[in-house]
Length: 54
Image (cartoon, rainbow, N blue to C red):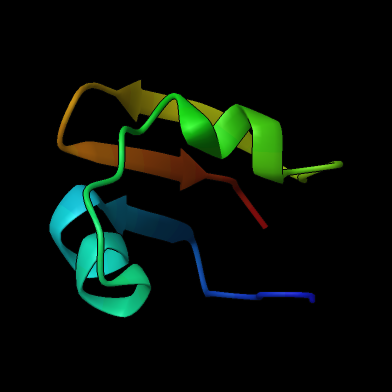
């Protein structure tokens, strides 16, 4: 799957849990991505922010 977003992408624990129907820890994100373009600007227990300049 390819996801694009202008400027930055915010992934919240709450939104992922709603879609998965189970609890989710943000560190699981590392296991799920093969590659990404950008820089991980913030990463904590509730949110991951990937940002880039165009």
